[in-house]
Length: 148
Ligand code: FES
Image (cartoon, rainbow, N blue to C red; front, top):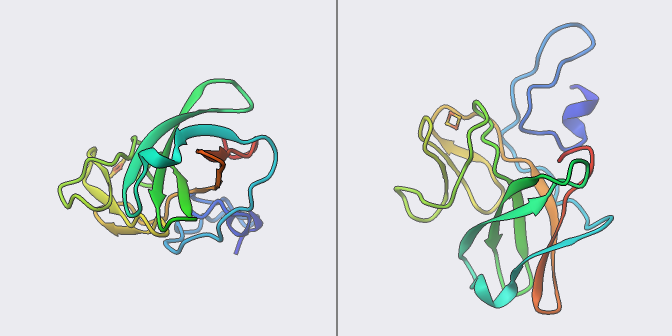
């Protein structure tokens, strides 16, 4: 297994030293610890338990907006993911035919909100995770510079 795959880039095709590529990993990466400068992206009261949202955050390297998917697992836990589809890079969103997951309309991939794994469609890898915390009234997302 390539080091890049172990570092949380579970949804990418990691080039190995032997010139071969590994298949994307469809298991949830560990939840990243909030590190660095967080960004308040939504009021916690705007995301009820078991609901999903798509928000924008700033890429700390470029300052450009990037898409972030949120899932409120319980009162204290919000999970955050990159909205970049692990199939061919389209934007994954919260509007889904199944109404309770994340969905990429480009080719019909579905992703589990609690872990980000691909559950249907051509995508074979889990969504990239971001650190996230409820801090006071806000949901705060931590985008690592190297993953943004
Ligand atoms: S790019 Fe998302 S399903 Fe193909």
